[in-house]
Image (cartoon, rainbow, N blue to C red; front, side):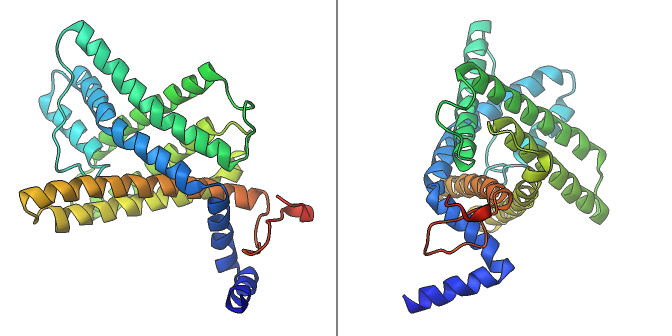
Length: 286
């Protein structure tokens, strides 16, 4: 145990080590891996129905402008570099009953992942069972978040259409992407956290999640361009599915870790020993 104790003392003395170690320890204590896995599982199965729903809405809104409609769909798929260039999503079509069933199914799939994220955030903040929003309130919050995310996706499309080509456009594109990521994670943490928390408390996690998501998109794009494109048909299909699973899982873990960061900073759970029970402000055991 001597090496472990020596490292424990070292990380407590250095801020650059103490904060991430405290976040990682709390992530472990809260079973963050299980929470992330549930979000990723729901997200994987809700991804295509939500894309189908969004494409249908865009198709109705831009029915008279096929070029702009295609640009809107491409802009949405660009947010998913692991699959964006590999799939084609078509609008829901058919009778009114079939369309209604498709929309309800898409919303049901989307509610699943949002409710999983809500459960994870409440667990991170230690919200007591039964103290959070009720059945109806939680689903209304989830629908509000889905509407907010859809609006931001359409806003991203509108902004991307105003940006031309060149290096300056690339810089503007990165800035706009980061700003939209901040809005997305801000809506996520505010709407899905049952415990009343001030925005200044949520800001560190929002910024970390926004930057981390931008990096994840770049890495996903690199994976697609250098690994999947040059692969054969069989290997490329497996690589696409596995890449999507890994990409979604890492995104879920990033979200939970960012929420853990907010809790650790707000409750003073660092520096902390990795070998003893955590303490907060005032020396109280957590």
